[in-house]
Image (tube, rainbow, N blue to C red; front, side, top):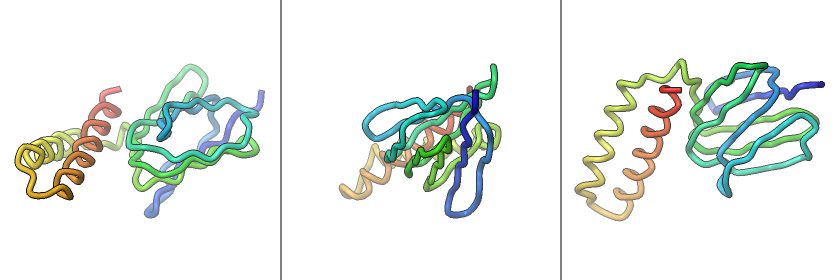
Length: 132
């Protein structure tokens, strides 16, 4: 069976180009999975994790929002930022989590609160992906 081509791209770099058997991602409307021959699809992505399978191996990637486009056995992820699990600096993510929690405890405005919530979500997602 023909596999899927998975490309993960950010404004700064190409994070991944790989042939895969399956892709699972967090869309804004819920999680979805993609197999070869999937119908064309465009989905907004939320902050969270993406995983893909190559044979019996599962690999994890942190995705900070963006879009997924599926067409002709090609999955293109256009992400605001993305990191392979092996590239995540867990100590830095834990420090970011602590800063976000502190800002959440003492928000100065609604904007500060929203930014702190998003920063916490990104940090927790990075830590979760790195631990897999």
